[in-house]
Image (tube, rainbow, N blue to C red; front, side, top):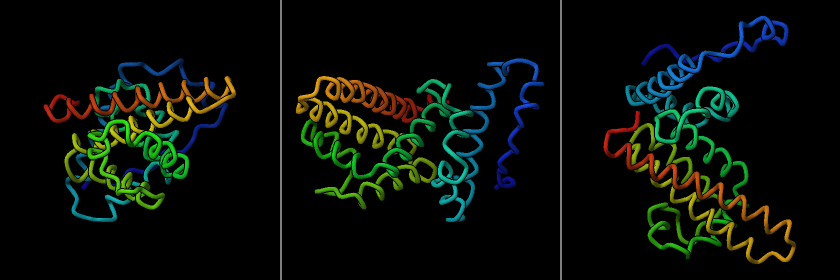
Length: 206
């Protein structure tokens, strides 16, 4: 495996002010693709379990904002865009496991096929939700990327449906509107992950 990635030192505000304008979009796109490809290839080329675990915990140890700077502007149908959404979903579910479980449970009866694709234990609990998201993220690098993206998309779509059901139960219009907006965003993320899974299965995610 190539030498381990080292997090670059942060620039001071003074140094940032001296930079010549915004980054070239073409260079940013190239960096996003090359970093995503290198990360995926590096893990798949290593048999070291600790390497895999470092990648699974990358957002926690290096900071989700660093991944956002690299990948968040990438379209969902690209490798960096798909990995960004996968890490963002993983981070949110791990951080707010109780709330994710509550919403998943509320939506899990909506589309049984999605529940089977997500692959959570029945009935799910917080520990299994966390373990499943770890398994999905790990599988993206060590197994079938398309399957991992599809499972993550199924989880998010069920959470979105659950969020919409919870919105319907609210009597406060402001809370109802907020949950409805959240459901729309969560559903969009889930659908993007499922679409990315199809591209990955066809060998067209790059």
